[in-house]
Length: 212
Image: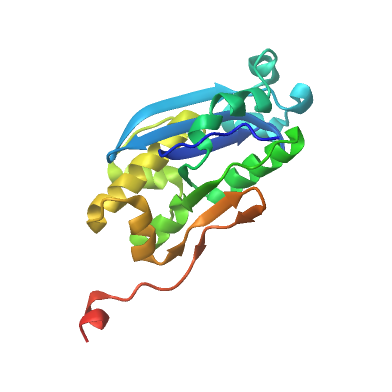
């Protein structure tokens, strides 16, 4: 079943989950990037299957069953943003987690995967800011002098987007996917046939080596 139409935006995405199950999304945050800045941020609560939560997950993000008892399910939420997703370029902090939530939730609902390409901002930061002891989102925010409410999906998506834009600006590139190429990252892809993860391709050569 397909619900998608073409879009040209770059979107940072973040999920919070209700349990250890990947198909238990209870919140999604989206930060839309256009012309080098965040122009729109959205958040939606999602009613997870059976509206079931684990105490551990509640302690992380503070979302409880009563908050999502009357929220739309994943299929309803994804249909609202289907036009944005199809053909989009996306980023996520620890993309392996967020895109596993997206895939598992689409599988659970019997929906086709959209055609998207994506980057992992953790991997970008590991290559761009190797001197940082950690590349967690709160560490990147502190490094950039940004404040946010951690584990709020909209706030996490916004900081992910702003961190990537800051890296691109420091690297002197206009496009996040040019930044990935410069840092030696393979772009991840999601499509009707499956997915390819965002991965390290090669170590970027230093300026001195290029001049030798």
